[in-house]
Image 1: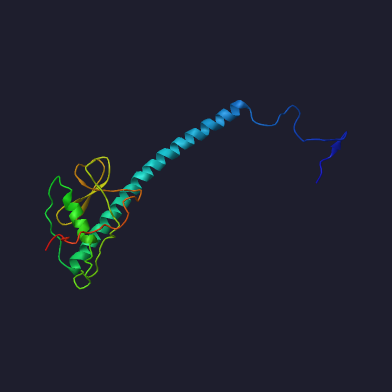
Image 2: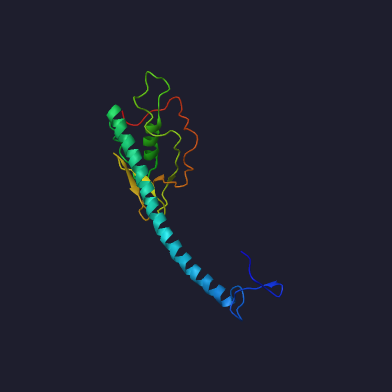
Length: 174
C-alpha cells in the first residue's frame, strides 16, 4: 500500500504541530520507573536466593546422611564421637564414605557411598552454611550459627578430581 502523494512528496498522518520521538522528561520518567521496578526485583531475587541456598545445603546434608545409612546397612554403624572445635571428624567420616578398597575381595559392598570427587574444605566462618558431624550424623549449621564444619560451596568448585587415598588408609569406626 502506498501513501497518497501531495505535491510530489509523501504525506504523513501526524496531527499538526506534533513531532516524532520522546521528550527528555518522558525519558527521565521511564528510567525512574524502571529503576524502581529493578530495585524491587533485586530485593525479591536476593530473598529467593537465600532460600535456595538453604534448600541446597539441606539436600547435601540429606545426601551425606543417606550415605551414612547405606554404609551402616552394608557394614557397621558409624558412631564416631564428635570433637568440639575440630574439623577432622567431618573429613574422616567423609573419606570413609568415599573409600573403596582397591582389592575387590576386601572392598565393602556398595562402596563408595559418596562421590570421591567431592573435595570440600572446612570452615568456622559464621556467615556461611556448614555441615558438622554430631557423632552420629551430619547436621546443618546455617549462617549465624557458630561451629566448624564442611563448607557448603554453592558454585560447584568442591567437585574436582577424585581423592587419592594413601595405601595404608584406615576407615573410621571398626
